[in-house]
Amino acid sequence: MAKDAYIGIDLGGTTIQYGLLVTADSKPRHCSSLPTGKGRRAILEQFAEIVTLLGQAARRQRLRIAGIGVGSAGIVDPENGKIVGRCPNISGWEGTEVKRDLEARTGIETWVDNDANVMALAEHRLGAGQGYDSGLYITVGTGIGSGIVLAGKLWRGAAFAGAEMGHMILVQNGRKCGCGKRGCLEVYAGTSAFVRSYGQGLPSHAPVKEIFDRAAAGDKKAVAAVGKAADYLACGIGSVLELLNPEVVVIGGGIAAGRGYLAQVRRRLPEYVTRTALRSARIKGARLGNRAGLIGAALLAAEVVK
Image (cartoon, rainbow, N blue to C red; front, side, top):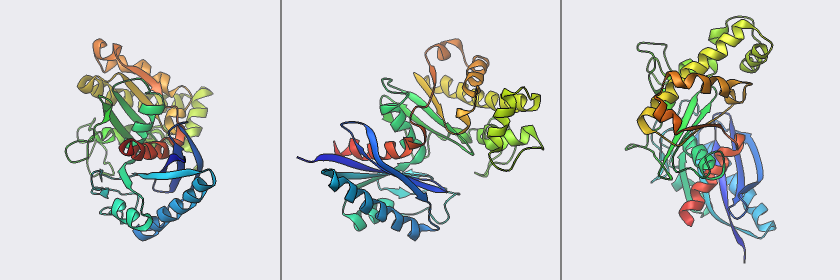
């Protein structure tokens, strides 16, 4: 009898990552990526092509595609599989009926959720949060995404717009954020904050990596830039710890991989949270890397089917 396999698709502003997940072994197969198409129609066609490609791979291994999961940027209504809120990095994507369209094209049941939520689901089930009942999952890069798991389940909020930690306001009337507000955490702890704090003299390619390299070599400006951004993230995490008191905080993304960054966040946390809330929380680095999104998307489908 054929084993069930689930397709996971992780849609980003520049790249679509995809793969197959067989929950019996919990390791993604046939993982690959392609540049994100321009516009709604092109992306939906790419999704259908991915399903065809992975369907062929599954048949060769005597696997049965039992469901499709999609993680997407933007605010997502998972009940209807529709993009219902802002998605600034993908032009024309808001309003897309992803579930309806993909099911019509493929005949396979499809589930859709926010990309940070599926990342959180993956890390909670199979990564650094495995074994915990509650957790805060953060990805730090150009922006700051987050997902929250409470009592073993994703917490999405009343209008599916919850867990947007990157858009907590830390500085009243602060710097303008891409969301339209001022003073959001994302502005003070994302990529732009590192570059702005350091100032001139950075390469245009991978400037944050260069900052971490210079900090490791003792460059005082670089050390200060890393420390300042880590301090803001610690402040944001401290506020969430006081509000939700999760068992684990998992931090991933390109910036989190920087040398010494997690240690700096941990060191600053006691300034922003009571000892009781901090004592019960484990601060850990993410384990699943850039495949967390496609793994979580596949799990989204697998958990519903089961």
